[in-house]
Image (cartoon, rainbow, N blue to C red):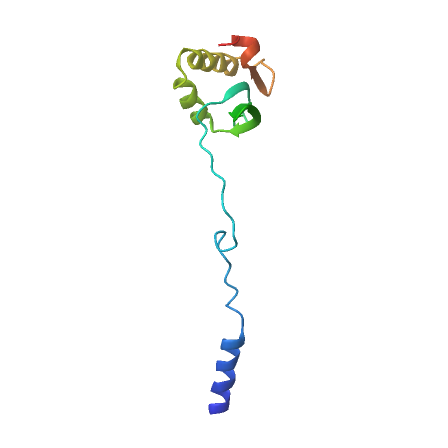
Length: 118
């Protein structure tokens, strides 16, 4: 019986850690989080089957980087309501287009073309 116990004990100590998965931090992953405080939104694209996406640019240093941000519709609406008068106008334009069943799908709102440079 002692031989069996010693055999089992050797197997447990020589076996690699019981297939424990390393966490991303243990693997060396370091996220690169950035806080976005200002974005130049060029287009808002959405339809009834997908979440809205904002296409635009973010200034980093002296140059602009293209970005795409996916949002839930409620998040888009909160963002627009917090963006002052222009945000309210864009929100109203979205509501009008959603109410019109004949409008093209997906809905694309070109901010510059429809609301000008502000």
